[in-house]
Image (cartoon, rainbow, N blue to C red; front, side, top):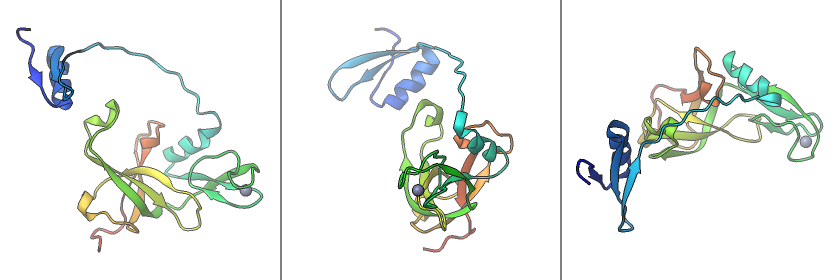
Length: 177
Ligand SMILES: [Zn+2]
């Protein structure tokens, strides 16, 4: 296979394939796998339907959650019916500041986010809200993040109407451990 370079890391294989169209992956399983570039494209017309107010909210710098009309359980995400009692919910604005409930650092990701690895994902908790919101946490190194750390929402200036229109950053410039 003249001209085709071999790599042990799949990340390097992908770089090479994007440049040259083909590479060999030295698979830890012992095989040498030919990997090729095969572009495809699709326009997916997607309706947010009942979730629409959440995405329009992001564009206006608001986080829209849901609250049960009957038992008042509050959700940090869109939810048409209550998980606790089954009743209908209504939209309810969330605070823009919360705390890190837990977090993880992603060293791998889907195609869309691969170039941004490593990045941090946090489950954010809000006062008075019963469930958590999963979001990117930017502006903090992994070693500086801790459970209970105060974080605030930041919204994309030109909305793309994607969940990535919002991310979180530390609410206090110098985080104390
Ligand atoms: Zn309920």
